Amino acid sequence: MNHFGPHTKLRTMVVLGALTYAAAALAVNLDSDGDVRLGVRTYVNARVGTQATRDGVPMHGAQGRVVEGFSATFPPSAAGHLRQNRIFLESELNLKLDRLLKQGVGPFNLVNDLPFRVRDLGFNFTLRAEGDGLYNWGPREYSTAEEFKKLLYLRLPAANQTAPDVAAIRQTLRSRAVHRERLFLGYVEANLGNVYFRLGRQVLSWGEDDAFQLLDHINPLDASFGGFLIPLDERRVPLDMLRVTYGIGTLGPVDEAFLEGFVADDNRVGFSPAIPPGSPWTLPSFGSGTTTTHTYFDTPSRTAKEMRGGARFQFNWQDATFSLAYLSTYFDTPAGELFTRAAIPQTSFDDSLPCPSTTLPPYLSNDPTRHNCGSPVHVFLSAPRTQVFGTTSSFAVPALYSVIRSELAYFKDEAAYSQEQFDPFLFGARGKTGTFPGGSGLTGGRRLRDSINLVLGADSNVWIRFLNPNQTFFITTQFFYKHIKNAAGNKVDNPNGTISTLNGDREVLPVVETLRPLPGLLSQLGPVEPVFARQPRDSFLQTLVIATSYYSSKVNPVMTFFYDWGGAFLYQPSVTLVSDPFRFSVSYSIIDAHMLKGSSGVSLLKDRDNIEFRLDYVI
Image 1 (cartoon, rainbow, N blue to C red):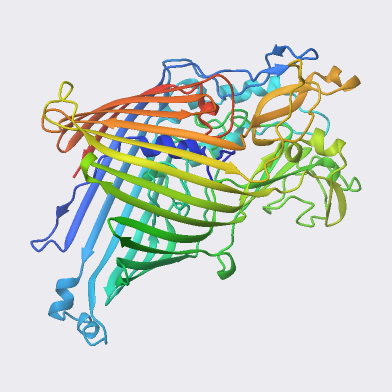
Image 2: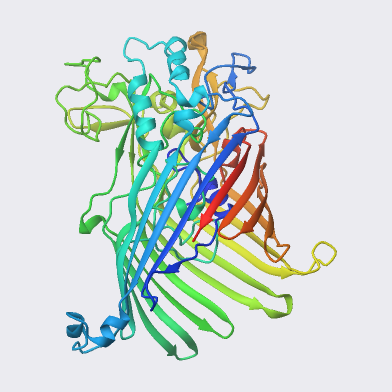
């Protein structure tokens, strides 16, 4: 899926991360035969905001005029302030055991008695450590709780609400975003005759595109640590997985054919954990604590019934490569269902009780206390099983020194949102109800729908002699199209341009674009009803990357463009200086959009322009 919702870390984030430069890791042999190889990559960066984040989401008054109100990007930060100080370390150890197999050393002698030949037996262990000094020595809006404490005076809770727990919010931020160490990869692999297998914690990527996720929906993406500008490969979440590939070879008119399949017994998803409040990378209106909403997360269980799985058949025909694939998986965008206080029986009601330890709201977990955890609105986020049917193709055009790529995918039952589904002022007024254990009440329901997705890409090497007489320019471009089937309607504004009532449902992202007053006497409350960012039925996105090198590849400039045809741009010029084992790079990310929109989600980050200075060390 390529629309953006909360806790997904924008699918833009996929685009931006994929286009960010990542140094290729080298390796050193730890023994004379090269059976033990160690690769280490580390870097430190300083990302500085060149644009002040905005403090105030547009709100529509009784006559449709815009007034200032709640914080859209939290915490507000001035231009020139540090936004990231990332420290990254990855150490990869590869063990090859073929020589021990051939010599029959110890228990490996038993392997040679098997009825099939074992080749390329090896292990991989990759350790990864990440840190961010922003919350320790960055500007005060990130290193202290001052901005959160200000909210306690600006957002006074109502009678059925409790104030945000500043200490708990800061503790969550620091526990998720300051440092993280883990065994990132750990697997064993081997070839058994015509069968290759890999078992353990690993990453698997399918498809022909390098920015948009179509068939590449196997491993979740995690932006909870570091944000959307982190390279895509650093945001993939490894899964406990068995991967098997069977080489077929020639089959009728096709050759180099193989079948590949995987099953993953893992409960990790991209939206849990979410980006913590207080991070500079949260979406508008999600960056601070709230007095009205409490969110619950429900992730898949580690059972055979909820495993991920998929298979693909790939082959060459003529001068082209084709594949057919099927996935049963979980996307990074959760399905959301919103419940109002009316959903909780009023008997034995106690607002002062804390939230239950269960991941389910009290009325879904059959909690006898029936309390609202101090929040009149509860949001229940879950991971629907989504099926992906797709095909890919690629072929070379030698006369143009180019490769043409394409990928087509049908997404069945992906999570989606509509204004009526997620707006309690709408689904409440229109009488939508749901029945829960112990009582009935108001909810907009849980929404799933299908979509058709297409990527066309071209990669080419071109001589531009007057700019670079010694090296070609590598130019790659991709065009992405998404069509939402059975999309909700798109009528919202009145013909005169004011907003008074919603004339119909519409496809949205659950990110507040504006607040508007309620009709009639309730308008005296001021702008309180959320109008969410619109998600177009048809999305058109374009990427362009131009790169070359000078001075024997010691100076490497890159220019990246991303254009959302809905009216949002990303410009990212960068240059990398290489003097092995060091690499120093500077990149400038400029995000431009007039208003908050769906589609790629780039517009949601239009106040996050920044410049990054980064030093890599690779052995």
